[in-house]
Length: 392
Image 1 (tube, rainbow, N blue to C red):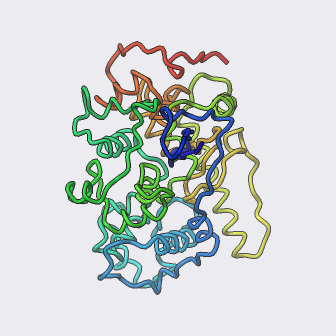
Image 2 (cartoon, rainbow, N blue to C red):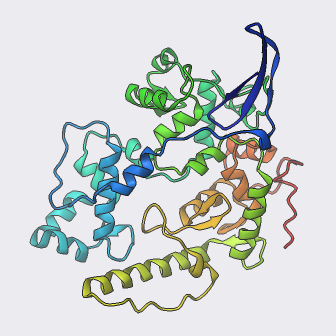
Image 3 (cartoon, helix red, strand yellow):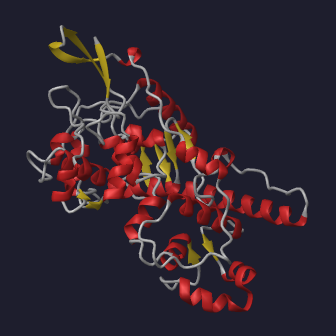
């Protein structure tokens, strides 16, 4: 007998006799699966990377692919200068860096004309030949369900979003219909080095292939890991799940009602207020550190402020919701994707967005036609997500 592990964690057991396959591969029960070792290269790099000195960094005219280490160094250097963790450098912060030349530097970097400089504008100025979509991918902590479906559809050889196209790949969970297809170089070349409309270069293909433990890869997991290197591993693994693990659902549900103060929805404006309080605390700590004093932090006003954690980007704290890192940007994405009442997000809405490979008719409808802000009726669905009891 032999066990085959796909990058999504699903394992199959095959029985062989005299070097011939006997019967069809069977899915191995979850409690009997073993997790293969995963690369920790990104985590090790993050632990050793040195913040860049933005006053000495020069324009890289000859660079077309942004090295991940450069991204991390500039990000950390930017955060050191961003005193109030706002995600932008103000006039005062620019003066501290470039002195009298700050106004000319502001005009050079501030491409959107809002009077401040954001991290993506730094990258755009110093790496003029690196496409904006590459920078955007590096900035992402979550991937939109429609993007995921296009990527999966291309791998499966599907070219249509409706009928027998991409939507048929949502929630595929049987061996006969397995949607875990390897990416072939010839296939990538024929698509002009694009996967579902997303640029995927030869260098990215080679990098993904190295990550793959099987010779015929890379598969969906390695492609996502390569294209979106800063998306947490737990998030990437969720995108391949065809059902929500019971223990994770229990943790998500418990955390949801604590964060919502036992309401059936999360209010976006409350999280934005908690985010501002978190940023204010970061600012107080930074000022105190420069003075060599202990920070005089104000008391937390509520549970949201108490439980806010430092995120990948200093200016975006997050809240643990089981395996989900819940942030203001994620809540906004969910609200726009699956809107019922603007600014209010329910547990099923979060689960549809974060577990977007679970079979759900409403999820398919949302992916196909976009959020239904004006629609008063939806397809009826009796899946696990749609039948969740929203009572506390």
